[in-house]
Length: 70
Image (cartoon, rainbow, N blue to C red; front, side, top):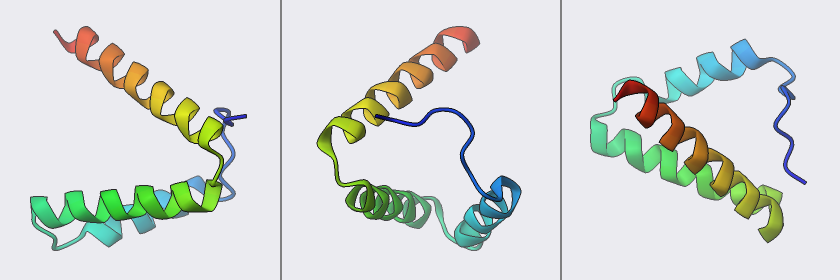
């Protein structure tokens, strides 16, 4: 089951590390880093059902954001 409630041990620290990992990267390299991070975390999760839930949740949230900005 996908956990959607806040669950990060140190959310601000993670966000800062995420931003730092993108520092000095061009757009293409930044996208590549994101793709590699997604694949590493997906491998760590490992369960197809959880990954499918995450994909659906992320897509739904993205479509909602697009609709709200239109």
